Image 1 (spheres, helix red, strand yellow):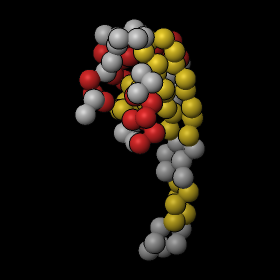
Image 2 (cartoon, rainbow, N blue to C red):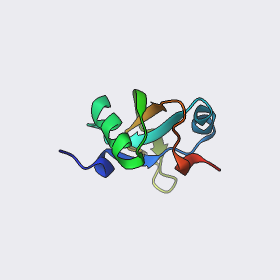
Image 3 (tube, rainbow, N blue to C red):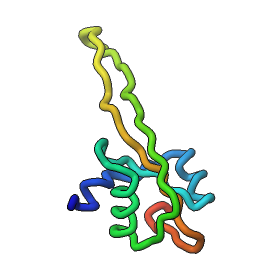
Length: 96
């Protein structure tokens, strides 16, 4: 059994993620090997809420150029999870 805090790495704070909060959907960066049931169980364990749906997406890291040497590198690839909660549930972390 994996620790829930190893699966959920951090919340995503962006304009798009705050728009989704109005629809009771929250966005998190998750471990690349995490499955949807594992993500659902981890959110349920950490925040004590009922999860209705989990959508995941893999994002490729951007290609970036080093100003000093001119060489190219990439930012790390990330996996995100958009978690939809049941009506009446919320995560206070995102509330302003």
